[in-house]
Image (cartoon, rainbow, N blue to C red):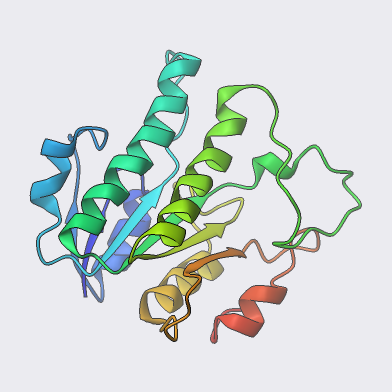
Length: 199
């Protein structure tokens, strides 16, 4: 499968995907710029993007712009290029406000803090969700504490492999979200039942 993997995805994750796919990167390019994104999408069958990490010298405005406008431009160009599937990798920080004893699944609403680093993953997920509602593209958000780190877990890797091979079954609603953290707090319930081979 030919996959565009943005530079926000860790190098170890990119190397994993390259083991069984034809991976194209976006290193050095600004995914907020349509003229830089468009040439990368020819013949691409799937897009994999991670919520950008927050740099120490980066303003709140820049953080939100990279996350939201970056996701918007990527998906707009992907739809125009006929890319059928996009995957967003997001951390679980937006659920930290809940009591530590709560068991949280995909039905729980995120409770981000007011800072940009907490809001960015939630806003990126909204962009992915709305594109699936309005356009001919299936999108999936995979949430995990390690999925955006330099060393994603084995469950993270198996989850993305499964989503890339999944058939949406012609469903009218083409947005899915899965917690793939494999912890007591974020159990793999939906991932186990809907993504065969995970967990």
